[in-house]
Length: 549
Image (cartoon, rainbow, N blue to C red; front, side, top):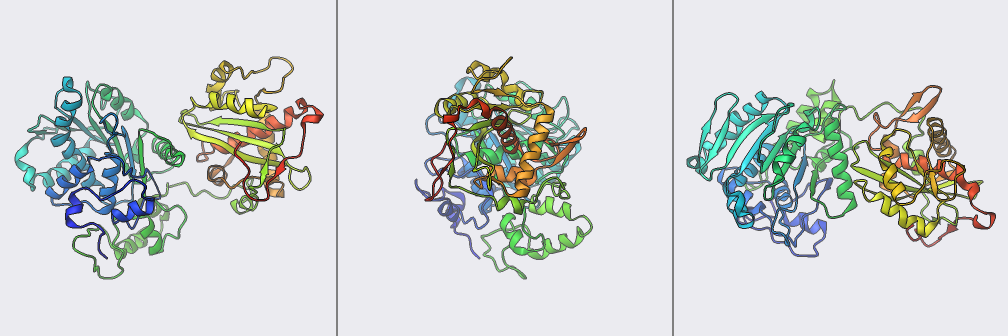
């Protein structure tokens, strides 16, 4: 196997053109293992990735196709402002893929090249760049810094361009450009400083919370084109900070909307762990040739299939750890089946893309605890015999600020009988005032059409049961939308007294499913507010999916 990149292209611009398909872009990079979920390279934008590739070559470690793709995307330039397009970069890739080389090259490029660029756009800040490299513990950061980063730099042509300080607690590389590259740890007091241009969290799956993010962000506010990089394999059930960033990154990529977040994830979530075909789908630095490698010398890899097979044998008693390290599956995410939730196979039998609501529809709203994403789901009645309800995700996007305005537009178009919004203390409570500001009322007496319907705990339990019963009986329909299906796939229930509720914390991302439950509650408890002449059967569109709500 040979790379599609020539020697010149490996350290020069990759030939792209506007209008290329994703497959064409991947082929231009020689990328045979593209990210499962990833921000797509924009051919209309220039990138500083070329500079990173040249530095990596100077370090004697030319970038592999996946590394080159990652830096070209992450260091794209906004053509209007001249700034880096992304402030936030999250890279999730299996173990032994070349993360250390990538991070070192990005740091060296920031130190050597970005200071002069900063002066062009913000002369007042000067050219000096401040870089922090973080690990869970300071000792881990120091070992990586001293035992892996420094030897590569010292053996390269760049050795004359820096001096080092290795005093415990003050480790740093001092570049001749004035740039300062130092280390920190994920502790309460780490990362706080007046200025920061590049912050790197390595193996951030071990981070206990978002304290470094809270420290890094204020120090970057006044800087030109700062970036916060997070690089890691997947984590465990305790990696709540990483889980938030992974869920947000997947959502951002799925939305396709402009954002300052770059997210790249190489993973395989359901292939057989003992299959080389599975490995080749998610390990971008794996040699594709079984047996003795016959790849071109220009195509570097860091592992062979025999090595991975040996790792699998080593982890026979702890297969979840193999999945986490090499397939990027969150450890602890494969839980025993929940007896209250019908199998995903049953859910997948209930797809119907031909239905559209009549004049009786309700909307449910839900968001996550951190306010990083929200969903609006519509529910309307079926024929009442074979189909009791139909569900459709109307909107599922990052953030929550967009929700009130979207609700106003939907209300004007569809005049829903109610808005299902759990305002009793869960995460959606944060939307109460913004909805009231849009004249979506929370009734104090008899409700009117279009008001908020806020379920009690008993109501949420009842309509969680309603939905699951209808899945079991086959009397609910949905449209096979990935966001709702994925929410159903990871859903878990929990006991609350004598009833069962959707468990938001033990489950994965169930925002869309929570919104669907609230929509059912709103529909069934407020449908009496629709006059008889208002209630019509839902429409059937035999030629395909009906127009969007």
